[in-house]
Image (cartoon, rainbow, N blue to C red; front, side, top):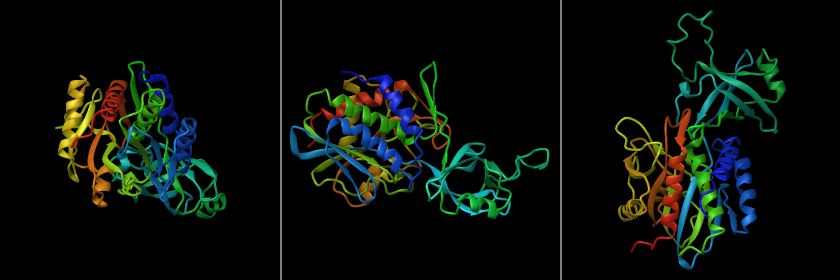
Length: 347
């Protein structure tokens, strides 16, 4: 059984369209739980809300853990302004210009959902002569609600309040040239890949080592898969986006293997094994360094876990903005994951 591209794209579009900014991931994790339930796997929900599924291997004394994070960038209502519009505070690291003009949803603590648009207060060029020169910052960015509200009191009466979550419209598209365009490919592209890998494993032979699939929910705020790691886990592979830009080797058509990020180098021997597996299997790959980046694997190392850690993933263009990758990069990442989980563990 090979990778089912139609199934991969369907689950990616589905999970991308479920709002899940860090701190508000229950619906996305419920969708993952529902999909995994068909495979009759042991599933654990951690106290922090992450999901861990177990695939038994031939050897149980040593295990591998693969992780992808379901949480995304987002925002929270900081203040309701006098004109009824909303001031925001960021969830995760991004620039306001990356979401200026974007449609959004406001998720209230009482279960209501409202829509709006993220805009500069001084957007209209017919009124504000220097609209293009002003800073895109917390002071100028606001949400224009799609409701008849012209005062703070009217917005409060709707049920909107400070502390409500705000999610961004992902705008998912799959083009005729096989590009995938969407917000939140970081890291829902990898979530879809791990779900596809579990689907593939359901019809494959038992892997040599037990595998844990960890769907974390706090990576964008720095403390994702850094707890509840089973004691028998020896190797920890984070599957997360490869960063593309000036000076980078990562592209949209290969799997990116990270040698180092902001946390420092990844495990030397494990990273070498991944590079060797890619070469032996003729998988398009790039080895790269991400200058401003951290992963679930580095978070686990910081938490004190005695593990070998590594990081691979599809190359994602314009990360933390309107992101894009190509199906070739998804296939290359999937092929390296398959090669890895059936390879002998390094000594």
